[in-house]
Length: 87
Ligand SMILES: [Zn+2]
Image (cartoon, rainbow, N blue to C red; front, side, top):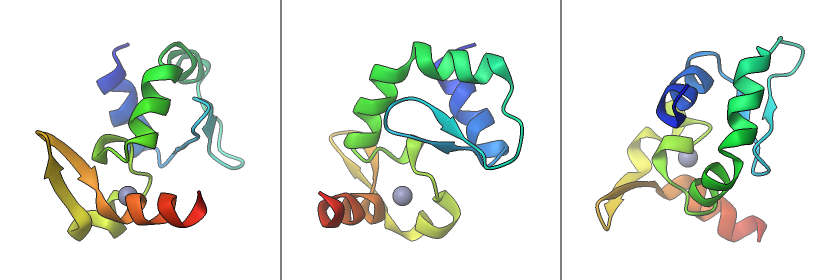
């Protein structure tokens, strides 16, 4: 499974991607293959999360109006503000 396939499945099943590469879905079962793939790509996922890339935004429906391009990459402005507030 590629990283892009993983990200599509994470969005489709409303799974929360954590910055350490693990997945959280509350009481919903997360298939082992998804967990393994997320752990395999954890460094790239963490880099994308810290860069607030749109592809890893956990709330794309709510943040839709906040997306913008920076250096050819779609960034989530809402996640960016939240990260600045949390850090
Ligand atoms: Zn976002």
